[in-house]
Amino acid sequence: MKKMSRTVRAAVALSLIGGVAGCTAGGRAGEELPAEPVGYGSAEMLPERLAVDGTTIWVGNPAARSTVEMFEDPRCPVVEEYERTGARELKELLLEGEIKAQYTLASFKDIRLGGDGSKRAVNALRAALQKGKFVEYHTVLWKFQTEVEASGGFTTERLLELAQQVPGLRDAAFDQAVRTMKYQAFVTASEQAYENTGDDPRGPGTPTIIVNSHSIDGGLYGINFDRKLFRQMIVDLHDSPYTWEKIYEPLKEQAEAEDAES
Image 1 (cartoon, rainbow, N blue to C red):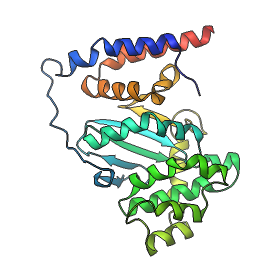
Image 2: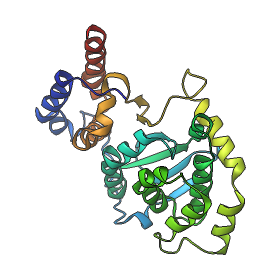
Image 3: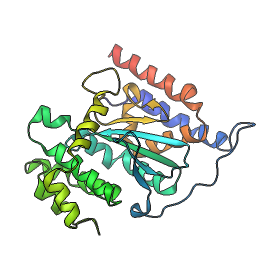
């Protein structure tokens, strides 16, 4: 996983502290200001649904004009790092109603590492969505991911055990869905959707994070793992979309040039 160079990281921080977001928060002249965001208070109140494509899981304020797309594999340790860092700020913004998120769940780690833990976890997450508990269960799975992987991965019994931490999730229907891999077709389709994203036939890697159609990769990848910078970047691109071309894209190119020289 590439991190930003110190020079570019400092440049990003200074550009943000310099007031780019503050001087544009009111919008450009003639720009229609968004409606006041709707606060959701807690994870169990967040709207969540399966998109019409049958693979994308939408979370958050449907009316939000900013979208963060995430591609995740439940067994990927780098995703676990992201969930501990930038994703925590993402969830705060979701609760504030400022943005909406969409998840595509991959399971390629099973192919590369052996086993079926990713597939079983993706199936269980789909079962949780059926009960309106996707966000809460997703949080629990990544909270214990490192521990689970060290003890053999996401087995059926471990997935059910962790589900007990989400009030109202476990019942006969959920348990049966987890035990029988009821959503196997969803698991397969989601992995295919992941592989069809980007230019690499194996998929873009996890986590892949896209904010308002801009991939936060290459020289900017490290922002995903810095809570303060990740939040500020999302807010910048939400309040003033042109900051991508003005600030973030040039910094991305600068960091990649520095990497090439080193």
